[in-house]
Length: 275
Image 1 (cartoon, rainbow, N blue to C red):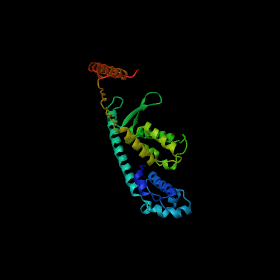
Image 2 (image 1 turned 180 degrees about the vertical axis):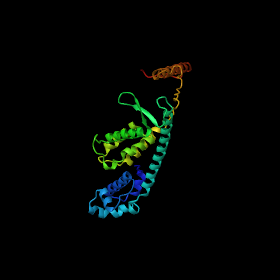
Image 3 (image 1 turned 30 degrees about the vertical axis):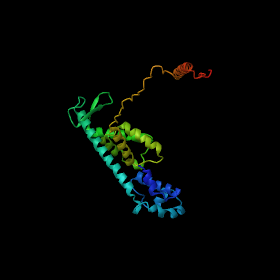
Image 4 (image 1 turned 135 degrees about the horizontal axis):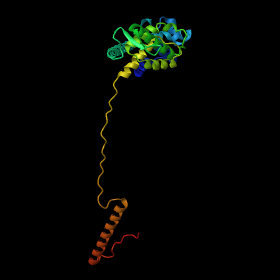
């Protein structure tokens, strides 16, 4: 669920800390269920508030929703996610159909276009109708999903997953890889203590597939910067050599002044202090 922090804070600055928690629980429930709570009692239960807290805060919380606890912003976001899922599913279906047509032309298919070959128990091949093969693949994928979700083999399926075998056919048609289904299902099951509806998993499958199909970003490599340094003048390799040169010039000037003064009789020559 996207959360735009600046918009959220601007629209909820008048809520108390408890009301912030209640509002977040309501919109998270809205997002996970794909719609608002059915009635006020369910809305109160979602917020985990007592009857007294609910009677005080519910009028303020209602101002953030439309009639029937509808939420315009969440409806828009849910529709965008559904549209992305439909586009990804259509693209995956096209890719699956292209691969299926390519596979039908390979040497391991048999002449009858309504049959395929699978291994038999005696180690050879046997012909199986496409419908039965698709059914077997869907059953295997459904078992893989249930195992990844933590349902032990041989156990009864949860009521909300009773049609998982039928939905598995749709996953195959959408091109969802079994490895991706297993990874995403394990991730969702590890984060949730309750069984999510199949539609919740399918949104996650479509999002994961769309992420895999996105092109990798192309890095921009900048040219290395060049460092320019001024050339040292002869005789300025170090501070010490510069000082020595300055002292030598000062002494030469003093000696020239002293000799000129002696010639002109100006008095006692100036001397440098002793080192």
